[in-house]
Image (cartoon, rainbow, N blue to C red; front, side, top):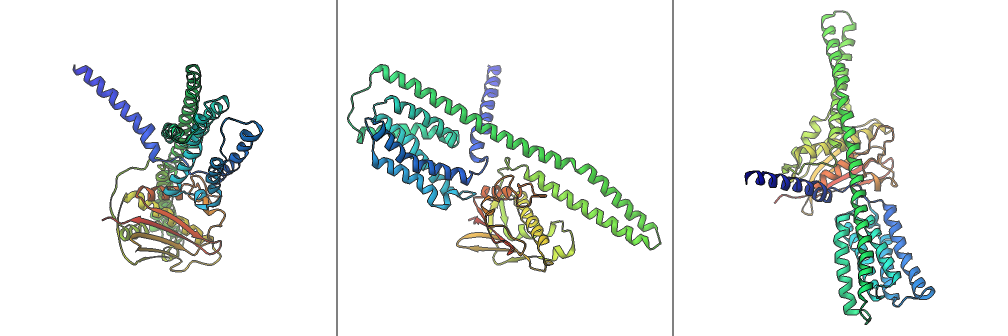
Length: 433
């Protein structure tokens, strides 16, 4: 009995691990932000496709049942994806994502299943329903598509019985034939959806892991550079000639550069954890968090440190990860300081201002810099993984990491900027009751 219990516990543990890694965690960890052009293409296809197919199945190749009202309604839902900018914004808000999901649940499984039943499961709508499953699984996450397919067909059947035309019952042969074709289409959509989702997730995870390993490997030559800096400073202390001061400054500068590079490596390794953020949270003081991040940041010069100022209008407590939020503030500091360094004028005290306060019962951390700003056309993409406005040295993970950290605390982050007029990043967080 004990052996059977051990085997049972082992199997249960494997099942639980699979469910966590392959089902639960991917739902909580989105792979990539949806492309605004993809959403617009889907909206255009839906808005134009339904009137077109009403003409095809209503006039050119008439089918038993067609409805101009339903077609126009489906087209209007697709048109809404083009008309309202919030649907194509990056990153999408939770409400936009929910509405997007609802729109395609209505226009795909619900509408297609209703039309299938209203047309007595004929060849045209059998093929259309099968194609719908393949489209639906490629359009969204396979878990959402599975739930949507089941619920959509069920509701379509209920609507058909309530409002559809009276039709004779399909023969047993047709029912079984259609069931086999539909099951095959649904199964292939499910398999393709799972495989493509896992492939994208594995590719991103592998890329991020490789970046973390490469960053870690840089520590070896940096350790050697640090030893050289220490040796230069020791040599300078033993010398009495005028060159000793230069050696001392060179050693100090070398040690400072090594500390800065090690800090940057820590940031890259943390950014490489983009897909694997821990769920541990604690009560954090926003003012204390910001002050600590600003104090510990490895500035390249005294002038760079002096340009950063912190203004606490009103402190607040929120729930999050101390290490991750510190890393997020570091990323924003690094980007702002780089932007200031690229500006034409020398930085002055207050050119990088971080404000902490409360507005409308939400905590706010605002990072405001007077740097070169961000071009309006690039702003919708700056939170995407691997997208960077700094083509030379940017890896495109810093802001994606910041957004993930903020979202893990049920907060939001947004940017307001104009070219040559600086940038304002605003983090809003729920207050801890």
